[in-house]
Image 1 (cartoon, helix red, strand yellow):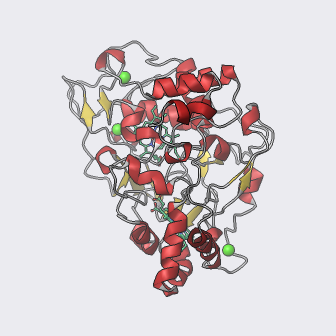
Image 2 (cartoon, protein in one colour):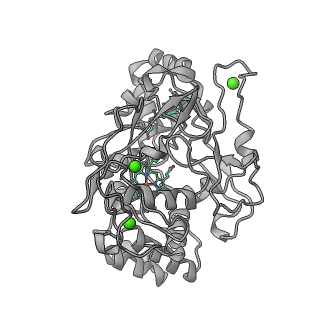
Image 3 (cartoon, protein in one colour):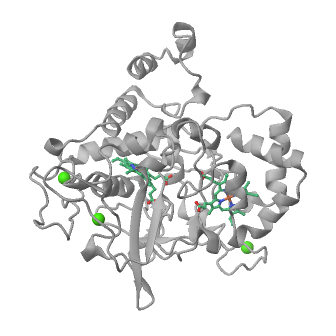
Length: 404
Ligand SMILES: [Ca+2]
Ligand SMILES: [Ca+2]
Ligand SMILES: [Ca+2]
């Protein structure tokens, strides 16, 4: 089905798709699909990347020995959010006031499975910060990757000089060897602003992808030739498949696929209650963090150049209060700080999660309303504004969020 759909797309027949296949879901009901304006050659790379993103690894193709799941799409089904059954666990502890990812004890990520003949990892007893992350959707990320550092920093207010109770700080992440800064990246020593992941732990899509192959599936690549090790396994080993288990071109195709996945398209945006909800969303201060609009500048991929788009994130870290403090952190962020998640695609997220919502970093919020009321810290004022709305107005806000 998917194959046929893309074949039609390649033939430029996307307009007539609906007529030929009446059962095909509308573009705004699904997350998968490329941004508009890719060349035929770029679409081929997109399709190759899509296929690699769906690849199921086996011990013979490099899976493990220690891993979480065997494919990217187990956790990112249909490019959407992951279900709690595929959640990740990360851990660490504080040593002399600074956060220690316990690298020599298998940190920061727990590999809960192992191939036959090996034993899965367990959380070391000394770990004090143990956290659960549910996979976010992977759509529209090429646009977020193309926002300039200057545009992100323009919204940071680390000392809350404007006194609105909201600070917003970038998370600075140490760059891996293979990181290639773009013209708009602003170095801070050897660190750069993180923008992907719950704690903004990855600077760009390549860093995120290389890390996912390794830590989530135990798959080595040209950019990281070492499998994760289980220090408690009797026979410490790194597997028998020759490294790299995936090539640089595979990583690059997956990165291209991720960067050219279309942003989620709105549904019902002209409905008067949705429009009312959008106005309320701004009035009660949600947009201080969930910023509606960003722009891109020059870009090697023409379709990503000079775009205006609406992700509803500022890509900054915010203190969300003790309720959401997981005792774990990455980069320069504190343990109660989280990156504002993009809200585009929110209304479609339950399609990927088995028909129910699992929101916030660990899926604890079972409805959009719960996700809002669980905000604390810097969002306290905004949530209390929301709670003071009439029941009808709160329903408009939810309807707006479901249209994203
Ligand atoms: Ca491996
Ligand atoms: Ca580990
Ligand atoms: Ca402020």
